[in-house]
Length: 107
Image (cartoon, rainbow, N blue to C red; front, side, top):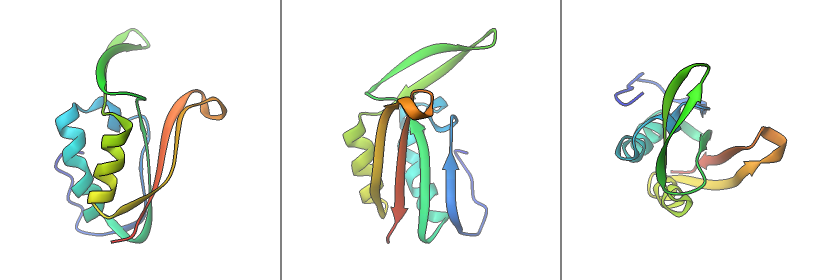
């Protein structure tokens, strides 16, 4: 994911339960990669944490790393990379408590 270069653009980009396993600097670096792969008006959906920080959780019997930026930083990164934020749903009860971003590529 950190060095992804598929050489084409897509109408939708989904980083569900994956993006937040990257470190904070790697997350920041992903926004130009998202933009490079976004067709005009592409939808971008990803899950994040609800506040700035790092944590360890468990998946089955393994420890897994989680990181998040502050929501305002995500918003600024999206805008700086040509995306318009359509929705941010922190801890969405209709989606098993995931925090969900939806943005549209407008650049």
